[in-house]
Image 1 (tube, rainbow, N blue to C red):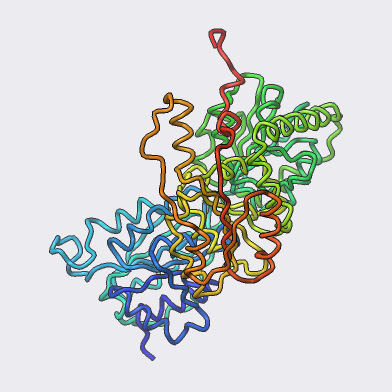
Image 2 (image 1 turned 30 degrees about the vertical axis):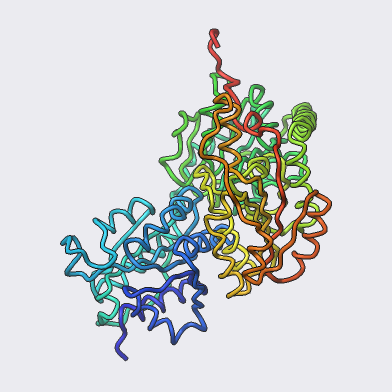
Length: 547
């Protein structure tokens, strides 16, 4: 039977474990969806109301599962509508496949004004992803698709793009492509000498600290064991939350890490840029940095390490554990310091940011340990980086350094769709909510059980607060006219309610989290303490005399 590029693409997606396709069809990808029709039992199309919704859902599914996910959109404005989601996938190392159609091959680069034409679409896609390729004909389709899935599973994870011109979808694949499952590339082999040098520094350290980022999410067990072996606190900011459970005595957030930073003698960075600690908090000659990362470009980006190990943590951590052996150094005093510092730092933050802690505590009390929490660029979202307890890997989803306002609802929708086995809570502000709240229609259409809490202060609250705090109250373009979110959700046929206190929120969550349905809880929100002085801290180490 003759196979087309469209058919081969469908079969390749299925063979590589993609069982849901977040999408918005259109004329340039009609042949692909025609091929999908006969295989939609194995590759289910989840169609959204906007391309950004499709891309954000793929992002959320990838972050919640750690596995590749895919979306498919039309070219030009379709691709551009996904740009914020792709940039967030890039920032958060999310393995998302962007399957994007293109205008007719003969018209590419001609500037003839073809429908959805933009200049150098492949170049645009390439700058938003870690790899982007075009399928030019039936002969090259298999190689391009294999390359894409190999990239999704190899090295540092991130988004990958495949572009298919509309006429190429129906091109004939001349020969059998063979195995459709793409193998990952082998990871870089850890340098034994570097591992030995790192082990020597760690063994001699009296006050070690481990810092984890998103790249450490798959290695929670190994990192917990290493922390216990060394009596080393494990610091996580956003992407590393959940690697070490918050109820473990060695798990610390940034307020504690900041206070411990001047006393630390060795830092072990695992799957993290170390940007905040090195660039912002500062270093000096008495602090040795050991940086292990699968991306060679990240090692030393924020400052030269004493030892850099270019390796997958899956390979490096066992070697490091073997090289360390049984530690004979008594670090009980350091462990005691960590415990006391953590208690004091957490109490200070909880007191200073009591309203946000109250709302977050209500969510934590009702969401099971395995439940997924998706943050947003809103006052409670910022404080969640410090004050929300996380007990499992991949149960705290963040936009990372991208800080993508409006990403949260649709991203959480993807997480809830991909992880129907656990409850998912999204928190958004009224400003960010309206970026993708239209996807309530998608939640209803596909029966996705996401509970969304909308903190409504009728403002871009962070912008307005900064204007008050830093610009003498010169408030401009930050006040909003927001809808009644209960009525809005009800108009979509979504369960909706309002909670005015943390106790009322707990009651609402008990009802919604067990319902198996999409739900919205609106929280009228007033002025709250300014969180940023507790998040962004000045240099504390390596200070010059004038500082």
